[in-house]
Length: 296
Image (cartoon, rainbow, N blue to C red; front, side, top):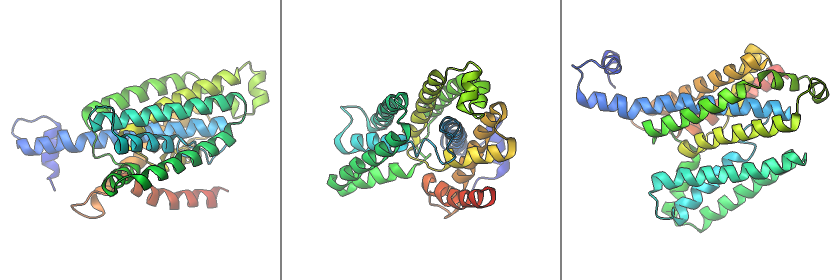
């Protein structure tokens, strides 16, 4: 409801702006907007590299079971306490630790070339334990868990934005150093090995970076689906498989997708804030069907 000119004046730091408007823009809305960009970019890159590694266009951090692991870690903290830590600190830590534990299990199975079966088993296992926690928890606790699982950017602060952005920037930089190796992998494993690429090390390195990046993002905002699935498809359609363009394209597509979803979550019903995870699903499902039907 703020005039556009007033928002611009706040962003430019002009002294004549109203203090309340400055607090609304700088401390409430702007962290949410920036967090949408950062988390969208992280999930977009994560989905792109997982699809590249597995040669599976349906793969994403969500289908890997990482989102379910984060939900389990956060839910356990909400239901059973965070070892004396404030909930705002304990919940992200619980989600991050559980996600990295799930990633470690996936790394072991990836080494044994049993990645796809481990992925499905972990996904169902974490979802089952999560359902059990919700069943035995008190109704108000179960409601808190459910709201976290919907995914929300509303608790974003400048501190969480900086942490997420820093981790994402480092991981994307390290991934960008392997763009030609990842592009060669798309030509087939035999050709990649023939070019002197250590596929085992490349897979593990990429999985670790994707796991750290997505675990950090999910731990602060909750479970947000479809970004890591749809953004790589958009980048692939527009820019092709060359990782020099595919990687930044997936970042931009993910950031744009989550930003649009964040705006929609505020304007669907004036005065009410929809969890952004619900909006991404409503937008992502028909969009993904369109991709599948038109691109085969």
